Image 1 (spheres, rainbow, N blue to C red):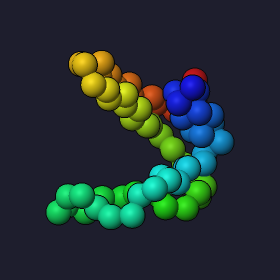
Image 2: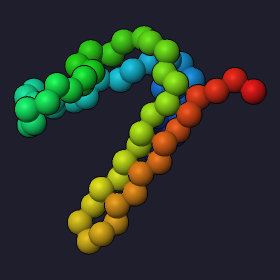
Image 3: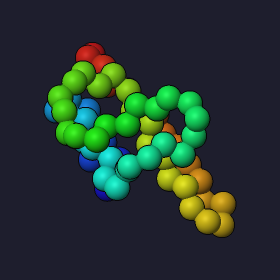
Length: 65
């Protein structure tokens, strides 16, 4: 479902805010979307991390044929 929503977000050029994010957990600068906004999305990284070694990632690219 998350992958489908990511693809749809890319099609509509809509960046969706990260719910529940309040504070950086690292000392390097991060760009975190805290409000929904429009913008061109060329690619997206979708990750699935879990306990027990069920980790995966997919890079999605938006391109015109």
